[in-house]
Length: 491
Image (cartoon, rainbow, N blue to C red):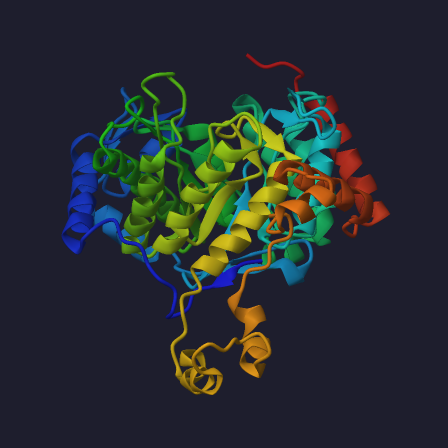
């Protein structure tokens, strides 16, 4: 479910202390001088003005004094738990562990039999969630894709219900379309309450929760902010995300992109902490760059630096931080996908990320893949092995063993080898390390083929404990009520 960082873990640093200070001060300058714009947020604008911010109500622009920002950072908890349906899958964000999660809400799924992309369905969502539940590397993840075969006005309710029924691990919720977001949140709360058993139990162990993503550059959608604030008052954690694109919605320079992103994050933290001080808050620096050749998301080595740098900036404030990993522009599983994903995952882990997000995706989050879920699980375990560090003591220095074996000897029969090899070596599940003849005799399968077979095996054998029948019935009734009460189309 995760990895406890210890003193032997090697670290990777992008910035000096002076550079971090410069990014912090530049972010404050942007917030005081330029500010952020909030759409559909009259009540939020008024609240911010009442708390010392400068507000232009006509333009919807808020400017944040540095003292407001600094006070909000102080009020933000530095540790908190994320709760699953089964308590054994709860995990703690505390700066001492790293966790991996899947991507969210891809609109396509790679067909497990044909390998072709197609629009995602409820069946895809349920099966992908079951595979995620079975793979130990993933701490949470129930929304890798979305059920496009369900009505758009209530699809997010179907998605949340399917996730809850097919994983015992933590899984959040989303609400869309924005025109119905507040009403849909009420229905999501009803579903979560039905699963928890009562409003009291839900407050003790919040299942799910919500947040908002800024609309770079320097904009918020007030309707989603209102939802996050409503849930924060009820005791739910809040996630805050910024997803800028360098060269398009953020400066092309990596430092400039971090400054703008950090300004968005800090202004969001201020908004939440002013309304509900002490709200458990997790920040998502989901950054990228525009590929100037294709006009699409880049996914190059510079992104890996950006993710690692974002972790350092977030840790400057003590935030619980999530960054992108498992990032690839490839449309199919294979060599390009794996090398891009490994690089984009390793550096953020070395930098100290709390959560690395994005497993199971292709093409920058456009499609979900069963094979990639399995391959990314292997990448997780390999990365964790690589960052364990090297323990140095009398036993590991092995001077006595070296002296015993002497020149020309071998260590295969030594008790020292038997005692330590399982701790030292990484044993992959789908990576082939046999000889050519042995590989050929076993069918000459590619890694993708082996991953496909493992996914198929999981789908045959792994069945998480489902929700109780009366709870499933209650959820179905909630969704049917929503379908009747909500408009089927919105402008």
